[in-house]
Length: 205
Image (cartoon, rainbow, N blue to C red; front, side, top):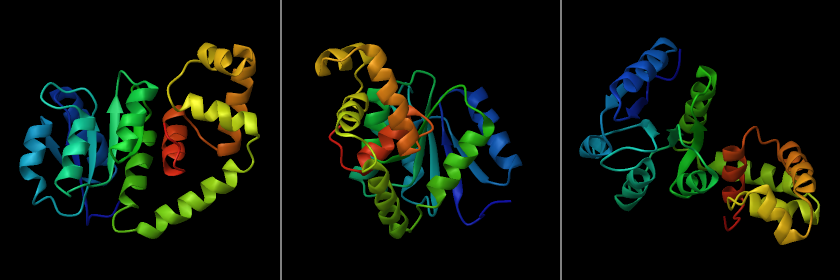
């Protein structure tokens, strides 16, 4: 069972997805509320209390990124996980800059979402966690070579290997090797996670 002092709010315009996610999270012990649009969630946001947000990226009325930006404007930002079936690096960058704790691409394992929500919940009222995170990330960043840092900057800006190779006058295969080393040294399990790390470190992605 999980901390019942906070509620996980699911925002998705597709009813089957809402039901599926609600069932999964309820079964593992979360308290869950569902919303069929970003607009309906915002209508309740002022009285939301201690909460985490799981939002789809692409929705008809307002995208997940726009929702996070609106919450920021209203000073009502809550820890959020963005999920999408159409993920790419620029979207991940936009979501992370808007305040998302994690960005998950469909299809994903149940455990991946559960762990992301736990991570989001750990941010509730805990500014020290962020400071510690950045300290750890800086230590990992120091392990990168100058070339690996150059590649990382271009990777998290959304450029493909071929373009990165052209920009740095190296082969796409060499870029792949650098990317693998970067993921290993930074201990990033996915590209969205690497993007989150880069933004936390102040990369201008």
